[in-house]
Amino acid sequence: MQKIIAANWKMYKTCAQAAQTARALSDALANGVHEDRLVLVFAPFTAIAEVQGKFATNPSLAVGAQNFYPAGEGAFTGEISPSMLRDVGAQWLLVGHSERRHILGESLQLIAQKTAFGLEQGFKVMLCVGETLTERTDGALATVLDEQLSSALDALPEDVKNALPGRFAVAYEPVWAIGTGKVAGPEEVVEAHTQVRSLLERYLGSDAADIPLLYGGSVKPDNAPLLLGLDNVDGLLVGGASLEAQSFLQIIEA
Ligand code: PGA
Image (cartoon, rainbow, N blue to C red; front, side):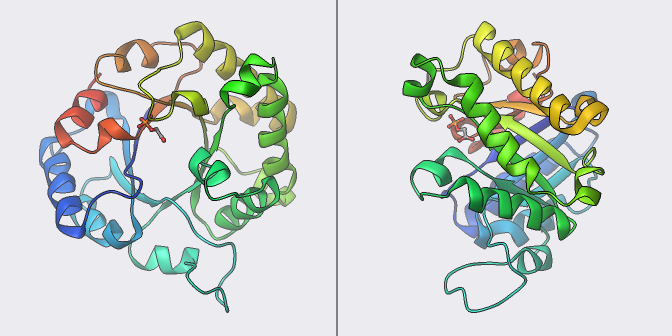
């Protein structure tokens, strides 16, 4: 399976800063990407067009949006629709990131609606799942992963559910490892990814084998090679270490 190395720039970078980083990535990767990986940047809304402008001629580079509202248009002050994001070049949508679940209070139901709507609108969707430290120490890892995956997948119309390979990815991001410098250990990553894969098999049957599973949470250039070599790890979702082109390039080439 093609590995996906994704950047989540969160609420960082002005247009000029985003353009500079995107240009550095696209220049460095102009002659192809290591092992034919897909490099994806979830940029802030205001910088999507800039990033897309720098990535447009390289099929290994793609841009996505970190958020959207699951409706075509309407009286939803402050929200943004998938078609507006398509307009500026977004091809991917990020859904269920722990900062949106835990800081912005997005419910399982809203995340399920967003997953279905994004896919129905023809976008590729990356769904993030992961447990908090308390959930892990309480032994609730399996329950949390099941709840987060089943709620999103159960809400999909059958035709969408039957056509997920190539347009759906799952990122396992333990909440306690995001932005903390505490990367999950190899056994913890393999344990969680094995569980995600078998849950996907339960909900999607044989298609599950073709859904990329990314790991995220304090990925850095020095731990990326180990993480990418683990069973069932088909890519990485990188926050802090994706902000500088140099460190993100080291991860892309890990
Ligand atoms: P981090 O963030 O790499 O800074 O831990 C990962 C993420 O939030 O996707």
